[in-house]
Image (cartoon, rainbow, N blue to C red):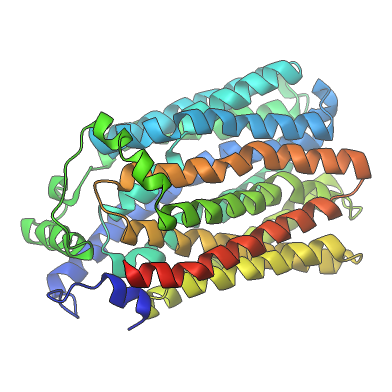
Length: 444
C-alpha cells in the first residue's frame, strides 16, 4: 500500500471490498460509462472540430493564424465565467438535468457556427460555446466521484476520458470525409462539418434526461443492497462527518480553497494540461499538413496520435489503481508530455515530430485520468463541487491564452517550435509542483 493510500485510509475501513460492492461497481460501469463517454465524445467533437474546419474555413471567412488563436481562446472566457456556477448547479440540481442542458445547448451553438461570416461572428459563437459547455468535464469528474469508490477512480476516469482522444480520432476520421461535401446544397465543407457534428449532441442530450440518475440511491437498475454498498464505500473514502452546503455556502468555500495547496497544485496541473491538449487538438492537423500531405491523408494520420494515447491512458489508469499511487504517476506522465513537446519542437524529420506528438499525447491524456483522482480523494465532499470547478477555472486560464500565444508565435516566426518549447516548460513545472504534493498529502 502506498503513502497516497495510507494518508487517506481510515483505520476502520475494510481492506477488501465486499462482493456486493464489486457487483455494484461492475453494474454501474456497464450502465453509466458508455453513455458518459458518448456524451463527452460528442462534446469534444464539437469543441475540436474547429481545428479541422480551419483547414478550409480560415481563408473563406478571413481568419489568420493569430485571429484563429484568439477565437479558440475566447471559448475559454465563456468557460471561465460559468464553470463554478455550473458545478454548483450540478451539485444542487442534479447531474441528469445539468449534463443534458450542457449537451443540448452546446450542440445547438456548434450548428450555428456554420453561419459564421467573419472574425466577429466567429468570436461570438466561440464565446457562447464556452458558456454552454462550462463545467462539462469537471462536472462529469464530480459525478463519477458520486458513483465510484476511490480505489476504482483512475481506471474509470481513464475510461471516461477516452472520450477526448476518441473524439479527436473521430474528428480526424470524419473531417476529411465531411469536408468533401464542399458545395453540396450550396454549403461549404466546413459548414457541413459544424452541422453534422453538432446535431448528435442535441439528440443524446435529450436522451440523458431519461437515462441518467443523480446518485446510486436513485438508480432503479441497482438493487437496494448494491446502492447502499456503493454509498457506504464512497462515504468511507473521506471519513469525516459530511456537511450539506447551500449554493451561497459553497461559494463561501472559495477563500479556503484558494489557500488549499492540493487544490492549487491540481489547478497548476490542469493549466499545464490545457497547454498541451489545446495545442494537440488545435495545431496538430496544421503541423501534419506541413508534411506535404493532402487534407484527407493529413486528417487520417492525425487520428493515429490520440488512438495510441487512448490505449496508453487506460493501461496507465489501471496501473495507478492497482498500486493506489496517484502523485508519482501524475509526475511521470507530465514529464513524458514535456519530453514529447520538446521533441516535436526541436526535430526536423517529420517522423520524429510525429513521435513527439505521440509521446506528448500519451503524457497529456494519462495525466488527465490520474490527476483528477487527487481532488476526488483529498478534498472534502461538501467542498468538492467548488474545488473541482476552481481547478477547472485555473486550468482554463491556459485555455484563454495558449491559442493566442501559439497563434502569435506561429504568425511572428513562421514556426511552432518556440510555442511547443513553451508548452514543454509548463509541463515540466507542473511535474515539479505535483512531486511536491507527496509531502503535503502525507500531513493531511
